[in-house]
Image 1 (cartoon, one colour):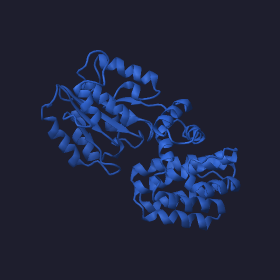
Image 2 (cartoon, rainbow, N blue to C red):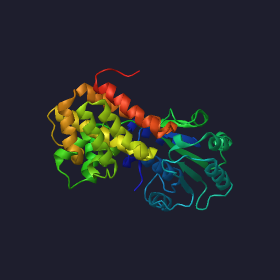
Image 3 (cartoon, rainbow, N blue to C red):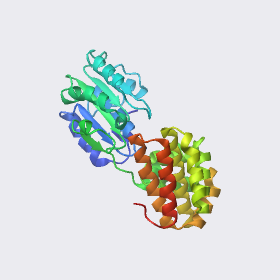
Image 4 (tube, rainbow, N blue to C red):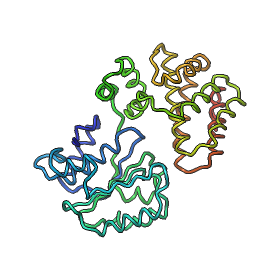
Length: 332
């Protein structure tokens, strides 16, 4: 059921959105926040609210429109999700064509555009007029995890709503519901280590690291050696990956770094059991401060992926930045 209660935390934001829905909700909205914070959940809630046919608070969660929106089958909700690929002008042209078609089930039409930071300039230019003056009853709900990588022309034409990280207790509540079979100590460790990003905690507990785990394990073990050549070799192994695959590797390495920090502080339940041996060794090889600097550096590097640099540059930055932090000097 899609209701505002489906989104934990963000009390002030939800209050502002409820107020806006009772008045004049912006026809071009941009939901912002890091990956895993709940932007798509909120976007789906807002889509249901704008289409809701029930009485009282919208979305009611029980009317036909709300149920269709929750099931992803409402004919007046178009989801544009190119994954990690670039959103090109062909997609923008299709949106313009669809805007000319009247809604099928109600008076409103919703376009939910995920990964807005991946929209190229040509595509954005095609949508500018629509975002400035949307047709009556047409709403654009755009989602981005990187304001820095989102085109200024998009930012200037949308009303922004930023999601905030959850409190540890709120993440723990969600994890208990999603993973009832998991040990309480594991859930508490995941909740404490995700920095309020529930999606990160759920990914760690799902053990769904796939191929990325092998690359991440090799890189963490290279960090343990503190040897420049070993670190560059481990990073170079990633040069054949796509940017989305490389982003997943960085995510797994960051989780392993969290585990290493926990380990160094006496918390022995890992978020990533598959990399426990490597993260344990790292906790004994470098200082907590160095691990935290590495963690922040991996996050910065992940943000750079959205600028579409070449893989050789990304892996070179990974190696050079990591080695300098392992040595205790701060890169320029």
